[in-house]
Amino acid sequence: MKIVGVTACTAGIAHTYIVAEKIQTAAKEAGHECKIETQGTIGVQNKLTDQEIKDADVVVLAHDIQVGGMERFKDKHVVDIPISIAMKSPKSLIATIQKKLNLK
Image (cartoon, rainbow, N blue to C red; front, side):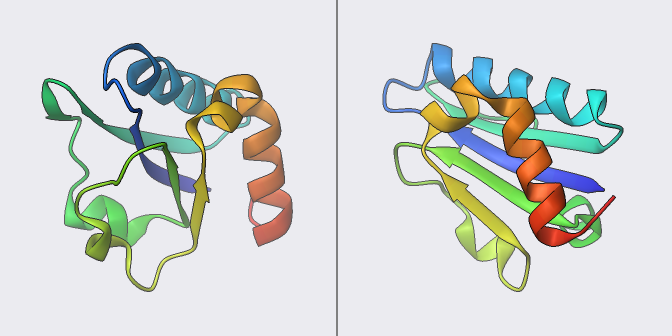
């Protein structure tokens, strides 16, 4: 499964980057490809390309503030969750996405 996503927290500092890393690690450990864009206080980093979004099976939005560029994800499977869920149980998040979308 190819996963892309965006993380953004209210302060735009620690949780934005910690959650991006947790999601990517959990996805890779489960055998999936994953790239997460961060939208923090220093701006957008690891920006998703149009091709990466097009090729993705699912988009994970883990955020507590508005995410910029939402129109990019039109017509994609989108999982929109509070950042705390991805922080607490990223492995469960990936497993649930895989099960619900019936993707491998």
